[in-house]
Structure formats: structure tokens, C-alpha cells
Amino acid sequence: MVKASSKKPPNRAGLAAPGSTSSALARFRELANTTKKSAPAKKPAVKKPTPPSKSGKPATEAKVPKAAKVPKAAKVPKAAKPSKVAGKAATAAEHTVPVVAPELMPGKSVLPRVSDMLSRVPSEHVSAPMLPVPHLISEALGLFAVAQRYADKLAKIGFSEAMLDGLQLYSRALHEAQAQLESQRGKLATLAEQKQIQQAVELRHQLVLAARLTLRKDRQAMESLDAISEGEGLTDLARDLLDLALLAETYPAQLSRVGLGMESAYKARELARKLTAKPEVTKSLPAEHRAVEELRNRAATVLHELMAEARLGGAYVFRKEPRIALLFTATHRRGR
Figure 1 (cartoon, rainbow, N blue to C red):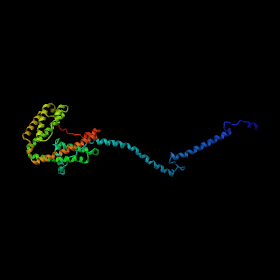
Figure 2 (cartoon, one colour):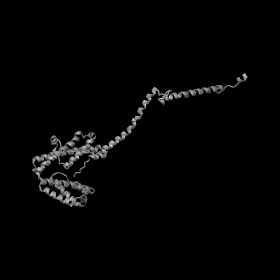
Figure 3 (spheres, one colour):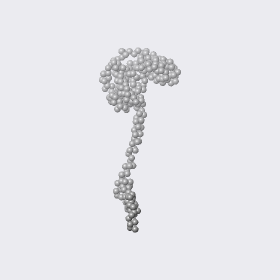
Figure 4 (spheres, helix red, strand yellow):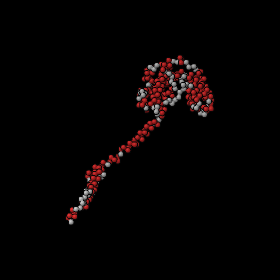
């Protein structure tokens, strides 16, 4: 028996005998059971920072991880999305908010303060207002409000803060100079003549606006209307009334749509005749009157130059934003 057992062929494949195989499997099961038992011990440290103790009471060190969960409820990065939307809405609102021009409130006179600077303007550059003075002042104040809003961008192209303040400063100076000039004119004209002049100015303004509205699609009529001057003086006023009377007689049907019939043409001719009945001789005007008119013209010239600078600057800065650039354009159309 002993010999027979010794003659068994060796295990050349290196496999364990049945006895040893069963013992190896038992060893593997023991190792597997040991690994499975140790795994749960590591999980509470990572996934469950506050495991309860064997006694059922929470562990003392578990209080710290619970407090660490509080910042997660804040979620600060998610709040950044509404801020971007609010920023875009604020930018859009800036462009939609209407620009309100400031008003000339009564206060200390500024004309004496700027008269020295106005006297330095070369005489060859001085000209009478290109627009009726009230319209020119209104345009300047509206432009000042727009330029003030975008002053930081205009400053980058050379439109300084002094130039910005000059829009409002010389608007007041022109207003004061025009008031002095009208006071001087009142001394040279009777009350009836002043009333006629006021009626003529109002009628001219009404006819110009009505013609631009009703004849806006007639190119030839608009060219004729552009040729009508809106200068000052009795001669200019009378000539404008005669031109507008002819325009009203040429297009009676169009003007009648806005309530201006042939009677407006008759009234314009009558007022023109009354204005030319009294010749306007500038050489006979008192020296004080001529000095006030010269000062008024200088204030208008400086103001007009500042307005031109602001409009050119705004057109360049906002060349890619037409909605803003439009705010810098003139609203009152003057004749050539």
C-alpha cells in the first residue's frame, strides 16, 4: 500500500492536491471575509461624516461636519446670473430714459463774466444767430443734457468739461443779451409796432411748420422752403412773409388740410407791407443799441461753435450706435 501510493505521478501543473486545495479555498474565504469586514469601517469616514455611535448617541466629532454643510445652502455662484441680466437691463434703460433739458432759472447774471471773452472773438467770425434765439437756446440746453450724460466718452475725443459747461453758460449769456436787445428795440418801436412784429414772427413760424408737414413729399416745395431764411430784422421778416404767402397761394389745398387757407397768405402780405412801411436804418440806431446787438451776436456765435463741436463729437463716438447718435442731431431745421 505504501509503495503504490508513492508511485503516483507528481503534480506537474503545479496544482495543489485535493487536501491542499480545500485548505487554500478556506484561506481565500477567510481573506475575503476579512476584506468585507474592513470595508464598512472606511466608508463612514468619507460618505458619512457623522455616524452614530454604538450607544445610539451622536458622536462628538460629528458636530463639526454638520456645521460645514451650512455654506452649501448659500450657493453664491448661481446668484451671478441675475446680475448679468440686471446689468443688461440697466444699459438698455439708460438708452430709453428720455433726456430732459435743463431750464434757465433766474439767478446771478453771467453776461458780465463772459463779456471779456466774447470781445476777443474775431469780428470776421461773428454772425447773427442762424436760428431764432429761443430755438437756439432750446437746442443748446437739450444738447447739454445729452452731452452731460456721455461726458466721459466725449472727453476722450477732446470735448472737455469746460466746453460742456460752456453750453449752459453761453446759453444763459445769450438769453440775457437777447433780453437786453429786445429792451433796446422796445424803446425804438411803439406798442403797436411791437405787436405787429410779434404777430409776424408767430405767423412765419406757423407757416413754416405747416408747409414742412403738408409738403414733406414734394421735393421742389421743400427746396423752396429751405431757401426761406429765419434771420432777424424787419427786412428779413418781411421777405420771409412774402415768400411764405407765395408758397401758401401755390399749395392752397395742402395747407387747408391743417386749417390754413388763403386768408393766411393775405395776412402774411399785409404784415409784410406794414413792416416795410417803416424803413430799418441800422446806421441811425444808437451806439448802445448796436453794442448790445454785437454782444448778442458774439454770444450766439460762441454757443453755435460749442454746439457744433458737441454734435460732431457725438456723431463720431456713437457712429456704431445710431440710437444714441440721433440724440446729438439738431431738432430745429433752419433754412439755408
